Length: 195
Image (cartoon, one colour):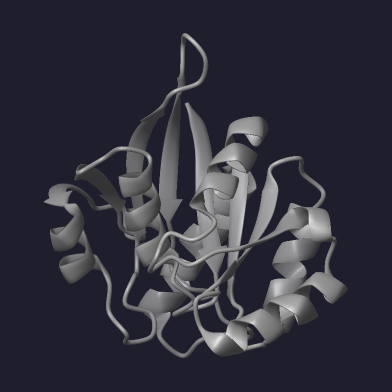
């Protein structure tokens, strides 16, 4: 099983992408394995709408654990399994909340073991933080790195995407909309090649 980790700053759309991408790949019921930083584990079986209602929120740092869903992806006659993992949003510097710091440490540990790194940024915000530069520098050393410029459905995102494309290797960036599913076919093709 290949492991794909969605990583990035808080509120860039990681959880919504994970839910809609799993739906795009054929799942209507998602079996979530939630791994909390303190070691507690739980399993959730939620539909797509219920996953959005329970796992997403506009509040920063709503996700405070690794949330994984297994997906069978057709690939020729055999196919392959992909473990898609949503993660806690990262910040520059040291956050004052101890529990959140533990969740971020858990995300960084997972980053070291991922086969595919899906680094998500909010293209509408047009912000390339030092944290994003560090994830990009780490990720591009592996063959399994892809930068996702999310929220491309918003008018400001097109300008942000162009700015990002000038900053990073164009071969490593894809415009997507976690909300509307734009770019999912291209993400699937890239993940398929990397996995």
